[in-house]
Amino acid sequence: MKKQRIVIGLCCLLNIISASASVDHSAKINHEPSITTVSPYSLHAGYSYRDFKFNATSLPDFVRFKGHSNLYLAGVNSIKIKDSLHVGLFINNVDSTLNISLPLGITINDVVHSDSLFGHVLKRIKPNLFIDWLGGLGQNAINYKILASGNPGILSGGYASSRSTNWYTSIKAIYRHPWKKFLFTGNFGALYSQVNQEQFPFLLNPPQLSTNVAQLSNQSTYLLESAEVIYQFKPNVQPFLTGGLIQVLQYSNNRPIISVTTAGSPDFNLDKSGFEVGAGFSLKYKQYVFRLEQQYYQRGSIYHSNQSMATLKVVI
Image (cartoon, rainbow, N blue to C red; front, side, top):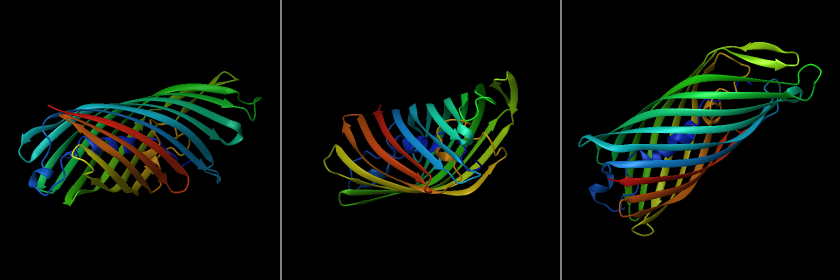
């Protein structure tokens, strides 16, 4: 199980941030310099539903899991520090449910509740070029329930509760270029994530005994590249296509067993490179911008997920 660790749904989170917390993607597409300016002070809200499935059946890394997560996000963005520098502050909550299948008929059900606070700083370098830095800290509460059906005489079940903390930071360059009724946005950057979980007891029955699960320290670094093409269908309607790559630069984990259940969604704790594709549209009415998007993720040939996202921006 060395390659199936879970930290938090950072991929989901960073996609919602990309839609809400970076340069204004709802501006009218034309060839004036104003299309690359940052939007005024604004309020943001977002929701995402994700289902995922992992299937690795080659020993000794045999493990299967599937589940879903709900992410809720709210914050304020485009707070002006000076003409070329803006900041934003967000909070988010992720509730995840996982069903994990291990050898010998062992099943683990997890319920994970994650809360996170993060901020970002957006710096305009040139009219079409931006640098965006993001940093955040999260707290995770995990409940485990284990059921063993293969050897009921040895172990029939067990349960545990634990807490973990994670922090993450990313930096990326954003380039935007208009062409006729199209707007191209390219992103290139890196993400670092770390999770720490203290040792915790796992109660097994029968017999009535307790065993300790070792402390966990997990660190991972990813290279992220993505692109988005927006089409000006009507002044207030903009369909778009997105795509990107996720590449593992560094990965370390000190606990090779029982690491699947560290925290929220499994996406950014897999030691596996992959890709994402998506499509959606945005609608603008007065100071309101609504964006709906569907994303598909794949990491190698063993992990797949689908994600639906909706965000609302209100310009103050």
